[in-house]
Image (cartoon, rainbow, N blue to C red; front, side):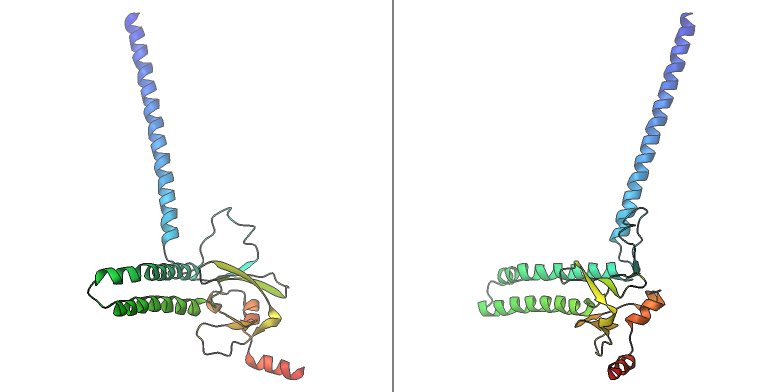
Length: 219
């Protein structure tokens, strides 16, 4: 009887050890899967990609209703703009300090000229980038039958600004500025026609000069 009791006790202990090992392995596997999923998500967010970002399941489904166009390089434009702003801030804040500390024997007037040149070059580059990408439409919302639509533009601080535009305010751009599709209320806008799949909307966003001239003569 004592031997039988010991055998049963040993069997039960082995069973408990097996279950404990299995539970530990299962917990480790689940933790590894969660970590891999988070790492994959972080990696996808940090990549510079061309094309609209995929909306995760159950995320902003109601908010995104009515969106008919995404800017294909919207995330890239924002990242480049943030990089340019960061470089400009560093140049303005650290440029004069580095200039005056690295060359102690240089004339003070010459140091000021060098520091001013660095700040001016950085600010000019940032301003030129903003001028170049300011017409870019990052997101467009429109409901068929509506006489207006909403767009998301980017400010010089790389923040999104919503604007409501009426179709009646759209005019041909009549400018040599690159990447401009139409003009409305004194502002230029750009839509990538290859990624705008709603042809009816695209036709209303790309008016022809002859059409507006004829309409103006008939008034």
